[in-house]
Structure formats: C-alpha cells, structure tokens
Length: 223
Image (tube, rainbow, N blue to C red; front, side):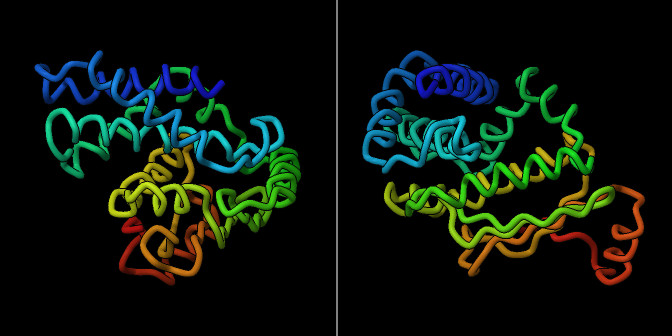
C-alpha cells in the first residue's frame, strides 16, 4: 500500500510540476524521491495499519510530498511555496479521490456515527507520529474536529520541513470544497497554535448563518 501511494501521488505531483517546468525530468524526480520516501517511513514509528488507523494515509501522503520537495531541491533548486501548494492540491484532482469526497455524506447522522468510531480507534494508538482527534457530531448541519497532536507535524519536525507544513494543511480547504461543505479554521498546530480547530458547516444552514453573523470579516482561511 505504501508503494502504491507513492506511485500514484508522485506521478500526479510530477505532472503538476512539469506544467510549469516542462524541462524537469519526472523520472529523475521520482527516482530520487522514492528512497527518501521509503526512508521516512522506515524511520517512523508504526501507527497501525490503514484499516486500524484511517489517518495513516495522511502521514504516508505527506511523506510523498516531502520526498518530492527534497528531490526537486536537489535537482533544480528550492521549490517556490506557490508551486508546492499547487502540487499538493493536484493530488485531490485524481478522479478516484475527487469522486470519493464528492460522494461523502458528511453531515449524515449514520456517517458521523461511523466516523466517530474510526476516530476512537485512532485514539487508541499511542505514538508521537499519530493524531489525537476530538470529533464532535452535529448532524444534519455541522461537525467539529480538534487535534492536539499531529503525525505530519512530527514528521515535518524530524525532516526539517516545518516551513512548508502550513501549505500542506491548506489542502483541507480543497477537500472541504470537493465535499460541498464550508470549513472554518483559525488555529493549526502547523503554525504554532496549541491545537487545530475545525468547524465544518452545511452551506445555507442556521449554524453557518450564525457563524457568518459572528464573524463579519469573513471565514478563517489563513490557517
């Protein structure tokens, strides 16, 4: 599974990079990134299988992005933040990924019950490279999430990529848009806060209107 994720995400990432830099060699980037990616995973404590920990794929995908970033820097120089952001977001343009999120019944009570069970399973796995989620159900119009620790933060700290971590976190807004929900967030561990706070609301719902009234300056999209 780890190798399959690298194959898919690295291919999409390279395709996005070559839109701006067609002279860059996708083969060389992937060839240099792959051993870096595998080394990151080998040096990372186990956080359970993909079945037991639904957030493991976030750590694996982040390792792909970090390894591509390192490979490009070694071959062509430091990648601009804006390009790195486009590269990360390109992953969610994969048809399989896009369909998955568009079909997610995010505010359905049954889905939220199932998701709460999955988060409880994540909490049982104790590791500095795991997440500590606190999920709040709010069907049919909202849900909340708070993370007090994050596996990607731990990986970024160890690999020296804390500076580009907030760019990766901004892809949460891309995912929310695919699902047709609004995400409001003004704190993230990646930017030095004590936790990440998420409020997902159904567009047009009473809680969304109330939030907008309480925040006339607009939504929190800076973190």
